[in-house]
Amino acid sequence: MQLPFFILLSILYVGLSVGLGALSPWKYDLGIIYWFLVPTVGLTCGAMAVAQLVQRFAPVPWIAERSLGFAPRRVHLSWRAAVRGPAILPVLFFPWYLVSLMWTSGDRGARSAAAVIVALALGAVALSIRKLRREVRLLRDGAVAMALIEHRTSTGEDPWEAIRYSFVTANGAAVSGGAYDRGYGVSEGSIVPVFYDPKRPKDHIAACACWLEAGRSG
Image (cartoon, rainbow, N blue to C red; front, side, top):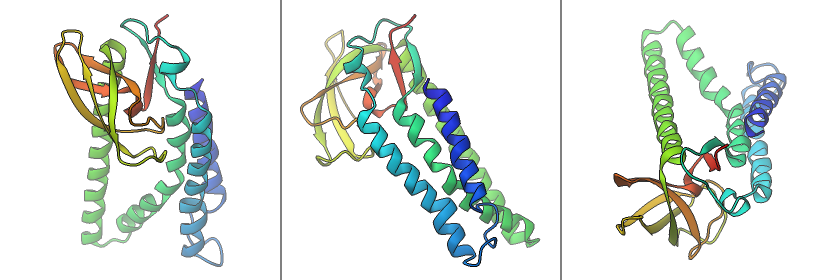
């Protein structure tokens, strides 16, 4: 359900951006100002506001299901990622246009800079894929422990607030870690599932720090 919703939202936001002139900064009288403020940054901010509202009502899997089941678990996109991921797509027209403008300028220095930016972007994508594969591995096959949230940067619900937590493995080893809350709004003193590698407990991830969610297999 979450993946089709992610795809539909992506098509909607990209379509709106293109329709509002994201591919042509000079389409309207206000030119670059309109292009920057409406179909790119403006639409992204609006989509983020919608995502912020939706995540308040999205279920928390470890509360809604009460059991995460045994490995291998079913791993799927979270509702929070499904509404937040597409929201950033409109603003990506901004760096895309600048890079394409630099590449088509004919200037060797500008082309070199564009090539460097593209290489860095591809490196960031590769790093994101690597992190996502680790997330899938731990959610699907990792052991589960309940961690105590010991600290949060503030009492708000900002999804990027840092948290610190600790948990005890099945073998009695105490492990501590830190992460960013991805929109679950966990508070100090609460508990959250942590998925860890039984052979290397320091290789772990908190459920609230994931873009994906784990549920019972089957």
